[in-house]
Image (cartoon, rainbow, N blue to C red; front, side, top):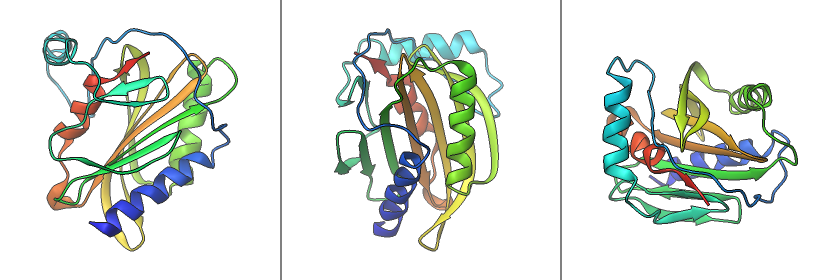
Length: 193
């Protein structure tokens, strides 16, 4: 588990190398939790209703800058700074959440360019991109594999923006402990302050 946590922290460091500043902006927004993951074929409206029923009334247990979110049961904080938080569970899966101020309004084009730079910087293998919504904002979600510190992991990263802030939520684990539902739990709970 320690190797996975170190690998996830290395992944977060790579995120910081794509040229973002280090201070989150104060923005207001609303939460409209809806996600449609890679390969989902279910009814989007039904997924939206379920997510809203489960998460809209929950107050965010965790915050990073202007981002609020909840974690699945069993995850504990491993590391936290002003712009990054890492969490791990005892099964070897881990989350990383980052918040970066970029100094300009994040357009769809800038989000895509930043996302591509991020995915390239972490040497993601077999990356598949899908469009989604996180906290009511457009998001790019990547499914990929990666090797960090000699450990090969499956990973999912959601990249999204609110105003002039750029966010990432990354979930990673080995084949035997990777659970997409845990990733969806976090994305469905995202809100902006």
